[in-house]
Image (tube, rainbow, N blue to C red):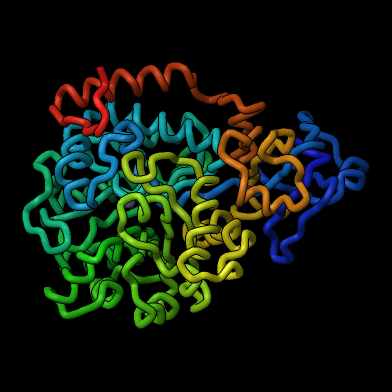
Length: 463
Ligand SMILES: [Zn+2]
């Protein structure tokens, strides 16, 4: 007897043949998918404790968000319509630099609740400061049932690109402590919660880390089979920094300090030039595209179709509460599918199918988990979502992939399953009290603003 059968669905498998199965079914046993096929064949062979009839649903792999700042959910909407460096210096760092571990936990709950309800089953958090409380955040991952890669940040300088000593006091960490804390977290949490927690290294952007510290971490990561993520080439200033200080383009600098490799996910890449693409392909380094964040912060548009054409593995990420401002991968897929067409004047440059690969199987590769997640195949972990097509914005559904990319949004997600566990069903979150999460976020957010004195600018007066 299997644990779960979902039948009657339109199954977008993203398997090697990229099959889309009409009236398809999936069988789950012991956290894993054990069979995929036509409903009538599956029904004859298998029975299960739980059955979901999904006649009006699309069944697809859970979405993989490869760039998330959990702690930024609580500061959503605090720094809109501002340039990146003042955005960091005057708002984001000041607010995050006053976080307590309870704020870190509340923010992680808010962010993870939003991700699960909008169909994200795995995420890569890029830079956790010790003040957010690493243990508390890992416990939220454990309790909510999501799959989470948690990167502890490391830094030993206080700059950003060419700006020296601009880091807010509450955000500064010591290089040696960063290393010991990450190793301690790795020992304690790697593989915890049925293998759903992964501990990574979260490099601060060039300007905040010495080449020596980058090299030490790169070496430690390789020896311990750990993975690294870092923002690279997000804004023009990043190129000016590495060229003026090291006479290197950002990817050349990253390679030189060990921040390139099959175990590395670099984020943004807006200002990465075609000259640098071979460094990515030669080393197997992954690139995470964040179209909403790059557009909202006016950083530019990364040359993603060109990178894909060069053979770089590109995945997708939402980034954070003040830069996106949502953690809904459907919005991200939509933007990724349309902005490159406008930029290149070529409607064929970024097909819907390519974008869905970025949000699923390419994300799995970037996390080093392509044998475990990212597609619906027998043997893989059961990280699945159901999208309800009986919704105004999804009718009619002639081409399910097109509807998923161009018109669906996170509110169309009906069911979210991670490791075979149903975490969202009929649009309801099962592992967290949603009302309480929202209430707590409002309360803690207001207190944080009071404490820091950060003034949220609005061009319109609120009386
Ligand atoms: Zn980021």
